[in-house]
Image 1 (spheres, rainbow, N blue to C red):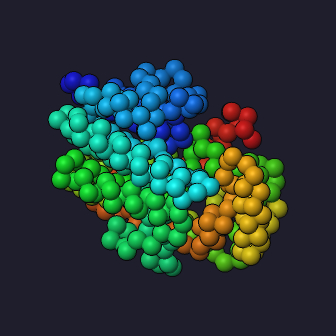
Image 2 (tube, rainbow, N blue to C red):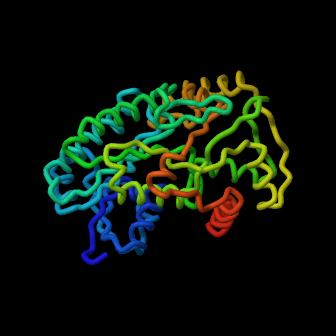
Image 3 (spheres, rainbow, N blue to C red):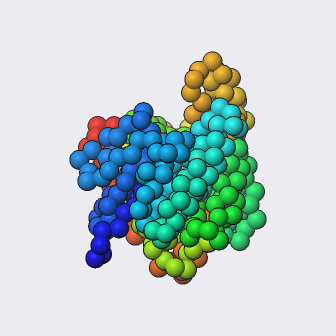
Length: 330
């Protein structure tokens, strides 16, 4: 790169965002991290980045952050909320604010990339992974809000060079969501949801970040949607088997029937009414995790962008667990 190009990453302090920051720094970008004043910046410590802490509701702050920028990677979003309004404010209104700030600086912008989710398409069926042409059927308010975000972004495609990347379930170093699975496994216990075989797409955060980079750099990707995902699909039995080898544990497997998942979710959701934070497991999350298939087809990204899954599930689980051990999380 002859002149250093400037990239903004929203949600740069988070799990996926911080991996994207690492990717862009390794490729010589000047990186601006757009975060909130209350954000924990531990994953950005000692990195050569600029911090903009205006968040996504401060329109003047957004204009300053977007000045002279070449690439915008919008990773930030709300994945848990107690209200529908919370999802739409966090996933649609914020994106509109960022799009408008980008429009004011459009002369320098080469790509505006938005990170979306497989939840937009909804679950798949046996042997039929969802792809970019699949009719969207989100089953949660989060998924519905991300679909509205996608529609909003595509409505700007004649004004800005936009691209949307949908991610499936993501794991890897720094993750705190799927981490709970590894934590309980390390203590000799794991649960499986229901009694039927469940299959999913699962991607390591480093591969996902590279997919975002490839999509942002490719002219073909303007105005397009891509699934950035694993090339293979995995069952929880396979994931359990690999984790067992990596951690050298043979856990007790507790099978939790679907009705019990919903019961626990209902109780958790009720008690969350008296808390400022949403429940980790609520009715919608129960609906999500009891689906049999969450698989998606990444062949469009492979064809157009030259994307490939580089980290196998075996290597990914090993490096993730090694990192958790190093951090003394497990």
